[in-house]
Image 1 (cartoon, rainbow, N blue to C red):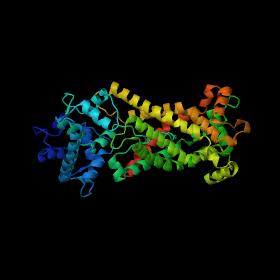
Image 2 (cartoon, rainbow, N blue to C red):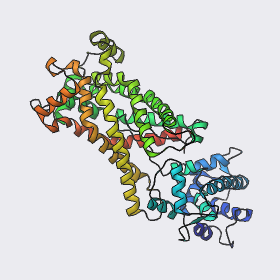
Image 3 (tube, one colour):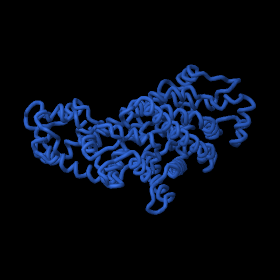
Image 4 (tube, rainbow, N blue to C red):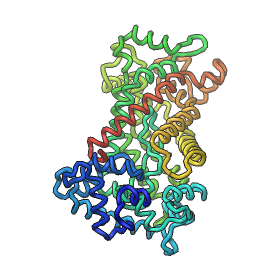
Length: 476
């Protein structure tokens, strides 16, 4: 990027001098394409893209918002100059924190050590990939100029923010609630940005679940009612539900499914932070296995808190027209007929399912991402959003595949009051019965609509999440 800036911007200068206002003026003039004395978001975005700089969504807006002292929607030269100088001070501190031996250069071992201190275990090859994305002269070391040029127009101010750019973000919502929660930087926690991220994620989940609710309902219908003697196909299930309650019945139970997102997300996040503190020695860094354990425990805590809503969602989903007059009527009837214990039917297989889902989801995601980087990315440590979305979709699907039998047992136990008395059993009894009567594949009844909803759910979730972040001022 040093050469890009020098070639495209500083054609009359001998070198890039961060302390020279002339160099900044040349750069400003190049970006100010309409020559109105201001650089707005569109000009900055176009200029950064044209220079081939490391650039992420929302960066241009964040830079302008941070430097726009008079709030006129653009940066004049003084504001532009002040922002870059202040930003470089923060980048200098980050560079020094990485430069462990104070020799003025960062090598792969120092990157690896710094990430391990922050709880991220990476291989030497992965550290070299990160280094190569910044190494201009091919020395396999990054000096201050290369570091500054790489992050000059990246509004990340510290190492945590820079590392977060390379991490898995769990905004994807596929209707399941047992993924490990996302993490937030200290700045996001102190500034309140975390709640905006959670709110955006909750809204994205609400829209994606509503959009795929018909597939979710037919999945539950097939899980409970389909068998060798009573085979329910995908199309047959839809026809049966529409015939019984009309098209609107395809969304039966979706209200509870959406309503439980917000409390579960908040509880999971708060529990995750507390479990990380409990599992980590005082003053120590969170290791990968501790992060996994904290995430699994946080998922279990959140699920325990909202589990009665899971039971109500299943009952409403399977209910016939007129059987329940909304969520509260459903809760009242369950309590009156079956007692408080009914709200925790299927709890055991649900809790057990958290471990294989979360573990396989994380393992497959990291393996896919690293395989893509090692094969296709020779000069960058950032695979790009499409690759990350693909890895997230496949890893979540693999996690579901591993935990699906437990999810089926959970759903059948939740629905036991709607089944014949002979069908009521314990978790082990149900599993033995399914294996004896339907074989191994009986544990995967309803998995087709479950797989069919993954791609539309992920797509809806991501699009809504990005729009919500813009609306809440996280990025624009």
